[in-house]
Length: 194
Ligand code: IMP
Image 1 (cartoon, protein in one colour):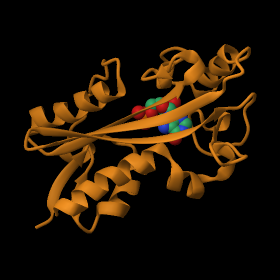
Image 2 (cartoon, helix red, strand yellow; image 1 turned 45 degrees about the vertical axis):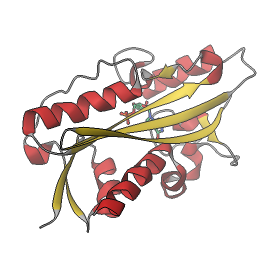
Image 3 (cartoon, rainbow, N blue to C red; image 1 turned 135 degrees about the vertical axis):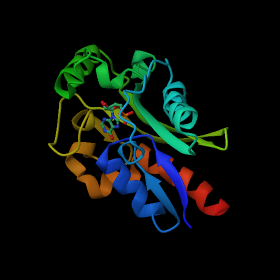
Image 4 (cartoon, rainbow, N blue to C red; image 1 turned 90 degrees about the vertical axis):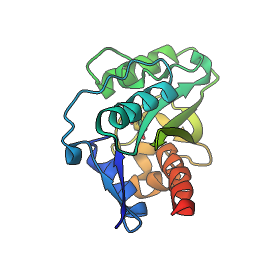
């Protein structure tokens, strides 16, 4: 029988991505699959802390091995902001346009445009936690460019490219992204074990 592992998300894209890599080795269950409809608190002030809160919640309430992710955009000239607060940088509405507008305003006078997306994954297996990380470095553009993707994609240009995440299309983005790199680190670890 395949080993079961919960991914503490209901994001269909994230599930599809991880099932494509691990699906023949293990059964990846979503929160909906285990009947978890709780709004799991993400109250930590680090990405590691939030990923941990989510994986720990599932492990403690359901006794199932589990992993969870958390991502932030870390801008050097803003001392790492918006970071763990990326989703609600401009307020609680999770409004990407407002978030990007605020970021471009904060960056107006800054010549150092360096930034990185960082994803942290917390895996809890039999009560033991392991962390994985994926980073993609780049810079914040002066204006929004491109229409694909989500979040801060139109204002982030990854190193080695002259297009933003929102201009390059998901095929390319999904190969080089922070999330892809963190997922790969997790999958390498799980594949070696099984
Ligand atoms: P989450 O932890 O994956 O929910 O990401 C938190 C927030 O970071 C999102 O609401 C977005 O604002 C931002 N974010 C995460 N991943 C990306 C990405 O690939 N492109 C653009 N923004 C992202």
